[in-house]
Amino acid sequence: MAFLLKNSLRFAVASHLLRSRTTNIQNLSSASAVVWQKANVGDSETGGSNTQKKSKASVKITLIQNQNVTVTALEEARNLAKRRSMHLVQVQKMDTKTQRPVYKLVSAAEHLQEELSDLKAHDKDGTSPDKPAQKKSEKTLNIGSRISEHDLASRLKNISKWLDKRHEVRILIQGTEGDMAGCEKIYKAIEESIKTPETIGKIVQKRAKGSVIKFNILPVNNNASEKSATNNPNQ
Image: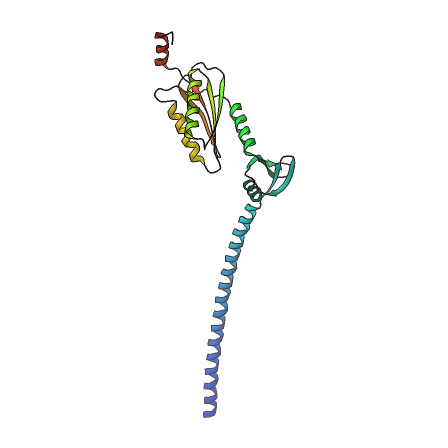
């Protein structure tokens, strides 16, 4: 009898230990599964983010340079333009045939010429609250952002002279890449010069694009000048 009780006790203890170990193993397995699942989710998210970045950087475009047409990545085209000191200009947002945007590489001179053509083709703004004086032919002036103070002063004198003679003046300020501050500085100097000591012109159609600022200056009637000219006809 004692032998049976002793064996029963041993069996009960062994069963209890076995159940405890089984429970611990199950808990460890569950924890491992959770960790593995989170790791996979993290890898998936990271992979998705990297894929999006890679996809964005490797957008295929049709690139035109001179008479050559090639298919390349947008980022590669930007690097090529930077290496050659050229401008990358978007010609077409999406070619319906190839399903790719179309860009072209142009030199600084070609880019400037296109900007000038766009400036000349732009319709005259007729909503100015100040009635402009009867104007004559148009004058066009190109100014680089690195112009010297002496040359800028000479350009300002030309602008004043043209406005006094009732010419509309079209101005294009061309800066280097990332030098918009230099363009704005020249614009402010021109704006100040046509207002001091008296207003002789009004700026309209100001447009800033990339490193270029374009605008027109319309001559305005100046009563003081007209009275002076009337009182002194021999001037």
